[in-house]
Length: 626
Image (tube, rainbow, N blue to C red; front, top):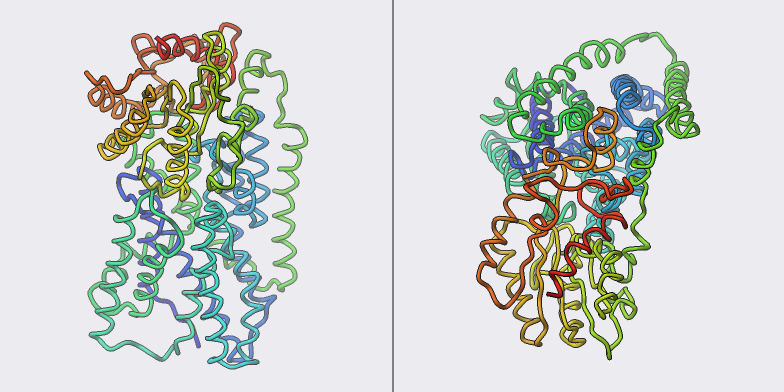
């Protein structure tokens, strides 16, 4: 099994990386562009396996030489991007952010970024577009596969191709089925961990077992290429962030990539993939994948308005330029540099380079990001970034995590006892963040308030939320408990979307509560900001601007649509009281950022600190109980 250059595979790489790039620039462009990563997995599995199989059958395979090739291929471009990103991070990030960045850089250079982000990221972590190396999770999965698969492939010469093919098939099915299972019970693990993504790389490993001399007939090649391309395009434009993914859905782009590879570049699709422009992008796809995300993250940091569609061509051009420079000056030059070096010398140099990055990162962590002579007021504001809401939110009881089904939580302490006036919050994190301030405010009015809430799960009866597989069951459970308990008032709050289907489902929730003679209050969308508010305040303080209020930092993409839709939807309604949180909190569009003691009201782009919850309670509770 030899391996010769195939231009069509570079073209397939181009489709994959452009899908990812456009999705990250603006998901509206390619709603399912993230499946480009899955296409990369299939390509990598195929190419690496074909090389290994060929050398094993020729009796020339060496694990040491394999790892040397991987080091030459992967490390130069990766090191250059991590080093350049680190310089920018040290210049523009605040100390606590530098610590988090350094930890992610250490994990990334050790090819364990997927483990790091799986262990550290949750619903309340910094937004994805604030984490410069987040995209390197996929590189961790690939490199872990590269470490393990050659050891598995040694069986090929021992047990023969048929048994080895069967073994890979069993591993493929095991990975796929456990991924589908994990998607229901641990979505983050299904996304980040190799055992649940291995079936995608094994797709490539399986088709690499097809004899290299085999080529499909003309009609078959045309069929494979058109169906394969259609599968990838369907996934890229038919999937979105709400799709249950990876799981069985990942089979569509993986099968598409496999069919295009097996078509051998024949036919019209093959000619398209092998065209000069596609090959040019494909050859630079690794560098483009590496550079594009830091470019987007730092652009959003320097210019928050760069999230708009107008910035897409600018950021795309910058990413392509930097990718080209990294490809020409680093990837190409260093990949084939020092060809006379022995394997041990290459591996030792690689290990030393990685050690330098790891050591530098450890120094940053040890020195707590080099706070230096940071202004005390700025430091106080930035301390809010580290606020842990789990205690105030009563996580895993009154606020369910994504992996929890309602029968896994004891909510008995979340519902006030009977014999007193009672109120209940029902919704997602944009409901539970009011609880801390609402409790004393309601108590002053003679009420006790409780909460039934779940992560990213709006109180919409009958609605499936792709990213939260337990949401529908939770809402069914919550509604039944509320109807059984019959509190005096139920307050519905969530991160609302401007979706007519959501309004219809919300009406069903309201109707069910009203049928039980429960008063219903619906809180509109709360302020949403382009960046985490403590960072906004700190930047204003450093610039000498007024840090107490802002209108320009609000994100209209999140606010405008839901606010307008809900006002129109509830106009003249008597079955529920609608309260515009934006109108109550923000005077003429200027929203407060700090309380009277200069404590931030939010610890991220939308969720309230304890101080913020108290301030919002003063604004909302009198209206709720009016």
